[in-house]
Image 1 (spheres, helix red, strand yellow):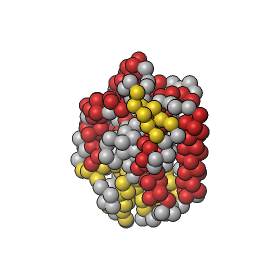
Image 2 (cartoon, rainbow, N blue to C red; image 1 turned 120 degrees about the vertical axis):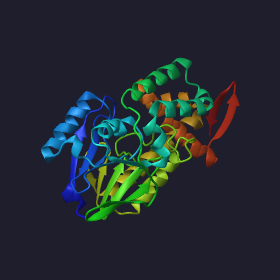
Image 3 (cartoon, rainbow, N blue to C red; image 1 turned 60 degrees about the vertical axis):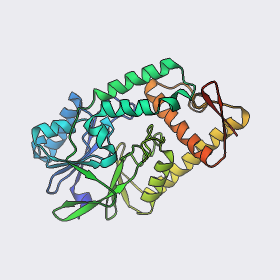
Amino acid sequence: MDVEGNVQRIVVPTPLPLGGTNVYLIEEKPYTLIDTGPDTETTRADLQIGLGKIGLEMKDVERIVLTHGHVDHCGLAHEFANICNPEILAHEKDRDTIEDFGGAIEKRFMECSDLLSSTGAPPQTFQVIREFLDFLDSLTHPCKVTKTLKDKDKIEFESGAFEVLYTPGHSSGSISLHSEDVLFSGDALLVENSPCSVFGGADKKSVGLDDFLESMEKLSKLEAKKAYPGHGEPFEKVNEKIEGMKKAYESRKQTILDYLEKEELTAFELMNRVFGIMSIEQVLMGLGEILGHLEILAEDKAVETKEKEGLTYYKV
């Protein structure tokens, strides 16, 4: 299958710090979109323009593959469902966030309330985070997943197929797609951004940084020559990029250990030491990254934990 000859990249805007989302049209029957972008008027307009340059309209899309259930990737899927009723594919563990983002996130938030409270973040921080989650919910609408995917499934085209790779960590149901030397990595390879979202573990409970690192290792074994990520420019030297991400992880881990050698800190205090002043959109990601590192360090017995007045403190 000549993937590179048939892939068309359309960058659509989002109102989020990550900026634009990459939507990929595979110009081979059945016409397939990889991700859709969020549900905003500007996204819809830019996507229509992008499809028009290829000679297609939204009604021509026959299948949508969602790399994960975050609204900047799946929010507009319901619009296609209304227009042309395409097959909509996603991993089974992100089905809940695609079909009911608000309900799924509220459930996850409640399940993890004790963990979040133990970080030492002020109560007003959680209120603003909840307001931000409500804003995210406004960027999507419920959309039925017509077929769930699992690791090693095949997505067939006229001249070949993509293999589904289960790559959790950024979300519980994140997938990548592989064909010959080409990789569509969704947000499993965030080269210039924080590595994982909050509670992206495969178990839908842990923060997921350990899963994210395992997914990177899994993708490195493919030795792909080119990657099409969910954000940013497509890139070559894929394994070199992955090695760079691993080094960034090791550097961040050492920074955390350096702080914890000096003093006992909560996760929220540690986040402020490591990242400094952050916008509320970034606090959720920043706290998630710190918790992910602390999960791994505690499992490896590299840090000790102590409970005090409902808060968890960490120390080397």
